[in-house]
Amino acid sequence: PHRLRHALAERSRHFLRPPANLVTMVSTVLPLALIAHSAVAISAFDMPSVDLGDGVRMPMLAFGTYRGSFRGKCTVAEATRQWLELGGRHIDTANNYFTQPDVGEALKAAGVPRSEIFITTKVPGPIGAKDTTQLILNASLPQLGVDYLDLVLIHTPCVEHEFFPNKCGPREHEERLDTWRALLELKAAGKIRAVGVSNFDAEQVATLAEASGVTPAVNQVEWHLGYHNEALLEAMRCRGVVLEAWGSLGGPTASNPGVALDDARLRGIAERYAASTPQVALRWSVLKGVVPVTATCSAEHVQGDLAALALNISAEDLVALDGLAPATQDAAVIVA
Image (cartoon, rainbow, N blue to C red):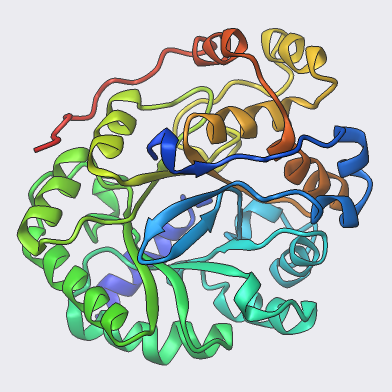
């Protein structure tokens, strides 16, 4: 319907868009300067990844392809190709980013084997089984130029933008369940390797899991130094759900105020590790078991983001980073 398409297009402008024992950490920490200046060095260490079950491992740093993140400085295809060529392997897109064709162009141009790349996309809010199946088979797969997807998320728990990100509670539960069952059928058919949700609160995740008998592998939500919902993180850990972060640096795509990257407290911590403040912010998320999504046109920033995965941060500094802004505790913790 026209109203639905308009709502999805309007809402898309606002997107960037685990349990500790599941995280495979870097086995050998290379000097940051070496990694930041050598694509060869980037590929020489083990990329941290998280187990999503069924033999699926997700790299713990994703590249977001929301067009607004690049502010016209480069195209989505250019930025995504550069990410792949410099060693990045996890790409995050969505049907209502309208960038799946751009990502498909980058995948073809970069020439990286499909088996080495982890592709996440999203279907809009709860649109029902028929529309979900059609979008995956007739839009996502052909636009990306692939025959399977590594992870598909339900983008929001409710269709209407007024409820973004997750203010609709039990409303549209049946539509969510119908959409979810379509994703499970596509997974059984081999078109999707893992399924999850985005912008769901703890109760919505619990209700979906209990109604379907299948727990989402991932919940992608807003998460950064200025806004980190520790109650939601704990609820997801208890269910074995991996939390993924959009707006991970708290920039203009974030809905809640972030900690400025030139914040004196953050700079002080970064200086102790001869690192940049974005590197510290990204590594903080990873060390908490949260998978950050980043985006940049800059090759230097791509290299720095990848280098952040080898950064050691002390337990004391992690606590200090937690305290840069009050952690939100507004999620219902439902772990049954």
